[in-house]
Amino acid sequence: MDWNNTGRRDRADTTVRSRTTFNDSQGTPPSIAIAMTLANLEDTPPSQTSFTLADEVDPDALDALVTGDIHDVEVTFTVNDYLIVAQSNGRVQIRDVEE
Image (cartoon, rainbow, N blue to C red; front, top):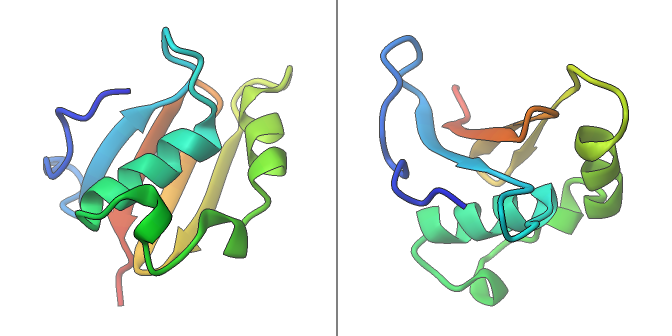
C-alpha cells in the first residue's frame, strides 16, 4: 500500500485526505486497504477505531465489486466523516465529507 500520500491535497479537489491502492504486490484486498488507511488518518490501530468499515458496507461485497471481472466500477460510500471512493483500477481516494 502507498502510505506516502496520506494528507496530500489534490489541486483539483482540495478535500482529498488520502490515496491508497489495493491488490498491490502483497495482494491487499480493498476492504483491508481502506480500513488501514482510515485507521492511519485517525492515528489509531485498526482494531481501536471508533467505527468499523463493516458498519457501513459489506467488506466482501466491496472486494468482489471492485476486483471482479467488470471494468470501470466505482463504489462510493461514507464511513464516519470520510467519503470513500474505490475504483476497479485499484485506486482509492478518501475525502472529507463536505457539509
